[in-house]
Length: 165
Image (cartoon, rainbow, N blue to C red; front, side, top):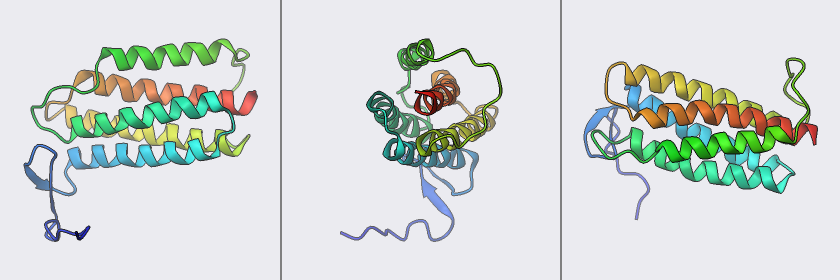
C-alpha cells in the first residue's frame, strides 16, 4: 500500500469526518499544531530523565490523538471531557507539591528535558490560540480548549520538575 494518495495535491485535505477543506484552513492549522505538539512531547519524553515525568507525557500524547480527532471532526461527539481537564489539574497539583515555590521567571535550558518541555509548552500555547480562532467561527468542543490550556500549564510544571529535581 502506498503512503501517498495524491488527494491533497490541489491544496485540499479531508477532515476526519470526511469533509474536504483547504489545507490552510484554521481548523487544519489547529489540529496540525496539535500534531506538532504531540511530536514535541515525544521529543521531551525521549530527553526527560524522570520516569514519572515520562509517564505523564506518554499519557498526554495519547490524549492529544483524541484532541486531534475531535478538532478534525465536524459535529462529532466530544473526545476530551471535563475528566481529562481534571486529570491534568491533578497532575499539576501533584508535581507542584514537590517543588519549591516559584520566586522568579525561569530561563529555558536548565536540562535537555526541561528545555524540550518548555518548547512543547510554547507549541501548546500556539495550538490554543489557533483553536480559539476556529472556535470564534465554528464549533469546537469547550473541553478541548480548556484541556490545551491546562496542558501548557502542566508542561511548565513538568519542566520545572525535570530541571529542579
